[in-house]
Image (tube, rainbow, N blue to C red):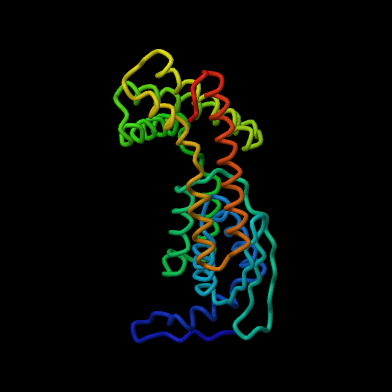
Length: 277
């Protein structure tokens, strides 16, 4: 049994609290929680370095050590007591979920709340269950904001207001199709080809019907919403952090999606008989 050391104010010292946590919470429960947490955080678009820091922060708060191996499809995690008298290993599959900054941020805040002593292990698990079961963002709001954002890109690159309107319509159509097809679990590569094709055809209408003076910018920016920017950025972050396997896989995935985007764009331009060069 661990005897708690308290300060003059009656508070438990961090060292005693860590030792108590190691005794109070079985390593199996801690390992299962951290592995499930890792699977969700990695699946929603976090970098490997963020995952490592968050998990180590929580493990230290719970009075145990942790060793992790992060792979693209699963996380291998071992938790152990400070004296190495006991250990527990978990392997969790990475969750196949859309990239979500909301979940990413809330999970990171959860790790800080646990590390700062604002919540205990039981409450951390309850909050985690609430985060992963929370409903996704409103599809219609996301559709509207994505369309307006892509229209803003068109304007930023020098497109006139007619081109902006065409890009907003092209993005709205393509993004809506993406939502429908992803909801039916269609292969993401096929989804990118179809959405890029539809958006490029609508974007090319500015040239076909003589709308505005910058139809070429409308075509070029109509598919920008499909560019896999987060996988590209995460791959470079993982590369700098030394997670070469994850970096290579994320880079490969991003390149494949970019190629699919290009195929759809070229198909739309060929259908509308618009020169690509």
